[in-house]
Length: 339
Image (cartoon, rainbow, N blue to C red; front, side, top):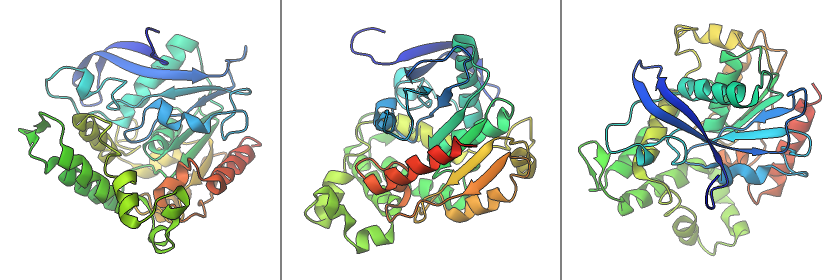
């Protein structure tokens, strides 16, 4: 590592993508926590969510946290398009190719096997886009994944979820900085518009009805929207955000050569202990999608659906400064490890 960088880079070389295109000198940024045991069977893979980098979600890791680094070797691979792994912002000015979760899992698998010699995952844990990656891992590497926790995620991007993302894209790209299919400068108005769209979808009706935002110190609804959402996405490159949205919208565990679009066959390939934890009030990763998937996990060692009983909508699955939802996640993961 150099300078203040707290992560490492896996140099994947020239990677043939699922689309058939070749991505030159592909890079996967990752960070590890804890120690790998001699049997190499204490590994937790914790993929990142939309726009997140590892330090955004590592708060969940700790001796008293949801994921314990004193017992497990935890790896956070940064999803392509997040600004640390290969992304439009660090890969030159040419067109950035369409990437998929299948591409991400393929390179993550190389990281595990080539750098660490890992052939067994005690758990794949992911929230949101991380949860979709966890689902892909369980289907694509059923003999490697012992357990998977899908938190506010799904096995494919539902049509309703896709439409939500179309609104996000329209809000962001409506900025005049978006020209000829890419952003040529920072879209200040676009970031704010994107945040306002997200604010309505990410949190629940009850969150706003009961003014739960006051618990975080906001003095009014406008104060919450301004300080809580207007600049949320401005910390990321706008072209990176579009690249990750395209990965999200294309998400489908069955959309690959192994399953040829057969969703039942893809879910039926999963052997892991599966824990599906949607947010009870999540508006775009709807509980009903996990309910449908649950019945198709016919070969899983076990499969349970435990919605997070929270008014925090999608963010119930990433409950920073939300002790009640944190406690729920911690108890559920502890129970999963008993299997």
